[in-house]
Image (cartoon, rainbow, N blue to C red; front, side, top):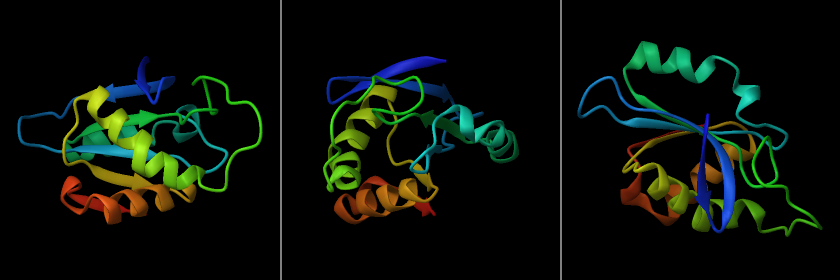
Length: 125
């Protein structure tokens, strides 16, 4: 496990490169109560079956990422999609990923894709 930094916060992450050049990376975006560990072995099984790289990270305030205090703004999913996710992708060296979002993560994936339509290969939600 490693960490990446986005918007000044340390985020728990697991990054696995693609099996071969030209394969995309799938970014797993967890649900409202999720984290890296709650994905269990699912990202690894998808990686093995697809040959794609993977990025699994816990958002700020989740898992082993930096703690978040206070009341969360109602814009937190938009903030994550528009501000944090681009920085997380850059920190991990990922361009044009496939976004795989579950629940809140699906909303974040869709918001990101709507804001940055050329920046994703696909969205799975």
